[in-house]
Length: 130
Image: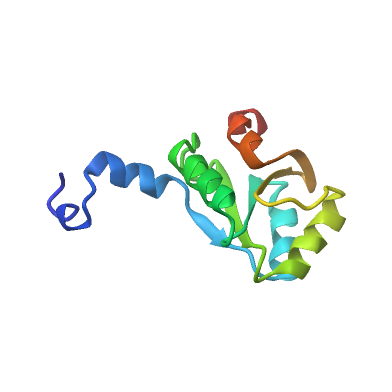
């Protein structure tokens, strides 16, 4: 264990893994517009999460534990659907993808190039969409 990680109960390898998936909170339509704009430069990933759903939490933790990309390869955005229901529906309308939770949307050049929900989220090969 690292000198400063012992008190958290994590070793350095675990700490590195925990730091791999950096979430940006997604809370406004103006942020969504910026995500669409930036998708021309870098892959954008939106994860719709339900904080009251055990399956959603389990899928999110599995996604984070197995996140295969290095920092800077893509930007991750986390939407809590309970608190941003209208934004979740706006995303569904914008990309013509039915709302589900948990749900993963991979966005490039302003378009959803891949989406998945529930257990199939962890089957998405993010490397294919860089």
